[in-house]
Image 1 (tube, rainbow, N blue to C red):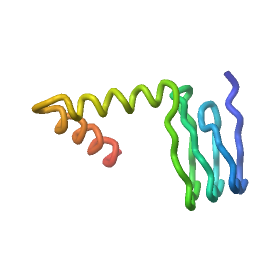
Image 2 (tube, helix red, strand yellow; image 1 turned 60 degrees about the vertical axis):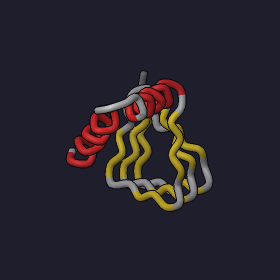
Image 3 (cartoon, helix red, strand yellow; image 1 turned 180 degrees about the horizontal axis):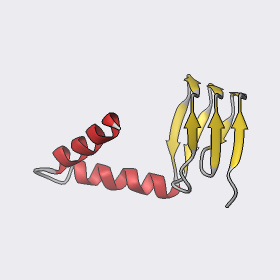
Image 4 (cartoon, rainbow, N blue to C red; image 1 turned 180 degrees about the vertical axis):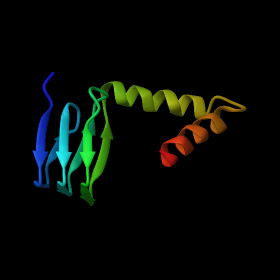
Length: 90
């Protein structure tokens, strides 16, 4: 699938589908940012103000999976926390 590129654009009060798109130096103000778990979007030097994030489809299933591990019993919470720690350090 072809990736669309948006550069130096301002999005206001919009629903933005992130999958299969590239955003370079874009501003997002009061937008709903949706990721469905498809091709990973590229976000470079973007600014987000008052935005909300929504995981849907495969991305939502991944979040539900991580939540179930977190609450599964001994060691589950630590496993998810270590995953988040790895994300923060990348």
